[in-house]
Length: 102
Image (cartoon, rainbow, N blue to C red; front, side, top):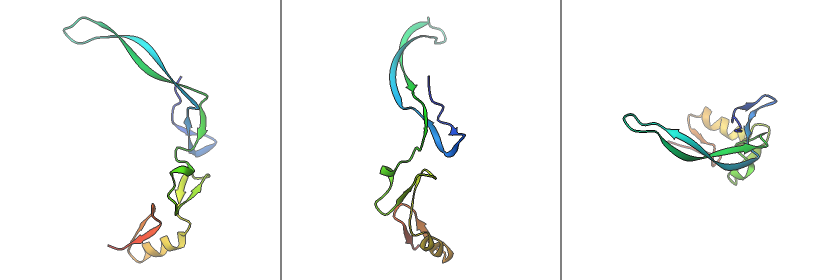
């Protein structure tokens, strides 16, 4: 079984993620034009205990950012500064939570 990594219906910012992963060997027949079929063994990842969770977690945030669990993202706490920065024609750098000129 594989989790579909799609959106979760109860929380649109979350994704369906595996709680457990395991590699499994699978035998397949491989066909190449003009050659005989060969038996190959592939490793595929199986998922177990699929659950809704955020792809981005608090540990992904920079020191100046705060983690928004509801939005599954890192955000700058100084949103008014970001707005003023962009209103003055500058660029807001969301990783450093600073206004960049030029």
